[in-house]
Length: 268
DNA sequence: CACTCATGTACAC
DNA sequence: TGTACCTGAGTGG
Image (spheres, rainbow, N blue to C red):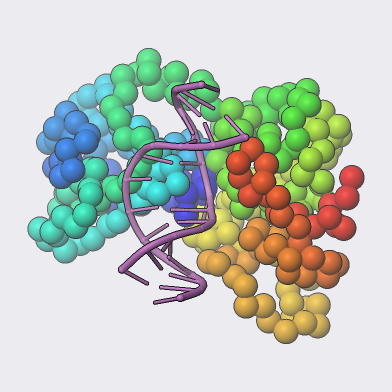
């Protein structure tokens, strides 16, 4: 779920449900100071990378949420929905209830703290105001592997392990290539593809990266049975045949995260 | 039912 | 580099 496109969808969903409405705010679990925004008007929900921010009226405080690995929102229109399990934050307005469980972060920020969080985030391919040059400068000067840089939210904000694996496959780049060994044009193609893939992920609510000409049907192969909520080239396909060249997809661990790639299609 | 693993990040050493 | 966070899906017995 929680790569950047999913957070942008959540921001839109929260905005639809609560934007401009006075809300009831509680923390059934007790681990969030929900009372601070109880009874206020929900101002706006916005995303930057994997971070979600909610503003209120009249209040300068901003709720900052990061789902981490486990966090989820659930929505229901059932009135007086019972609290099940550990709910960090519940918002209710006009019969709509949104429950937040298991976030890595759910905290109130003052404006200067909000600015500080944003200042640590690189450009987000899903934001129209993204400063792509800032990411290019970081990548093209770094000795770190491009696979590491793509997961560094200070470099690019929003892509996670799936988009990383898939964009490197689509651009035929060896994941261990140092950032500074990429040409500016090659990095531009990576950025542009992230913009495309993540926007499509936002629209569809799932991650699909396989080009039509590589669909199994187009390749004269039987339909695949290894999808997990989206259709991809290499993510979690260790040992399975590459959809383009047929050689086995490789996997290893880099910076504590699983990395998937096709050694044949993505050779340096 | 017990156990592993995950689309993420921060912090300890 | 390892561990904590703390949830749910999947797997295997």
